[in-house]
Image (cartoon, rainbow, N blue to C red; front, side, top):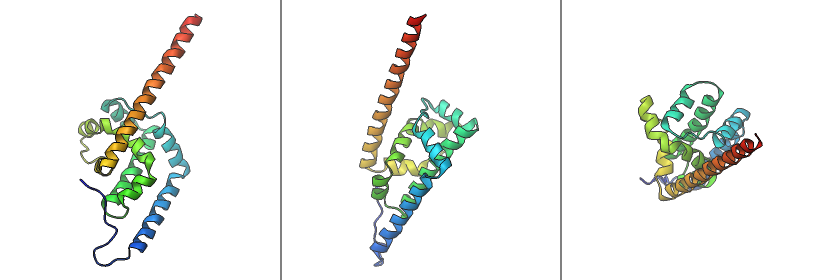
Length: 172
């Protein structure tokens, strides 16, 4: 599915006005990302949040508390941005160029999305972000690169933990 939306409304609409409206919206969305609680939520989701299975994702989302709120806030935000794309309010290329973080955060969720939806009977959960990210060859390519980066991060974290455990064992 191609998600790119035409800038022309088909009735001789003003493309410059539409471009200006999109720029204003993308800047407003950027401002929202800077809000204090959203920044904390993005730090959590962009950092230590790294579910390994659908069951772990379900556990994080259903346990309640601050981390649950962070996950729902960040992914709800990105799904809303993608709904704007799907409804023609933002162009997919503009979001691709300005929202790289979304692809990284989606890469953390994507392997577990189907299982999560099935376990919680939420078949439409994160449907907009899925359509935008996976709806173009560029999006799928970026997703694959982000998933590779995440795998490298997991591996390095395991190696670091292993070295730390080995050094503490040698001290005893």
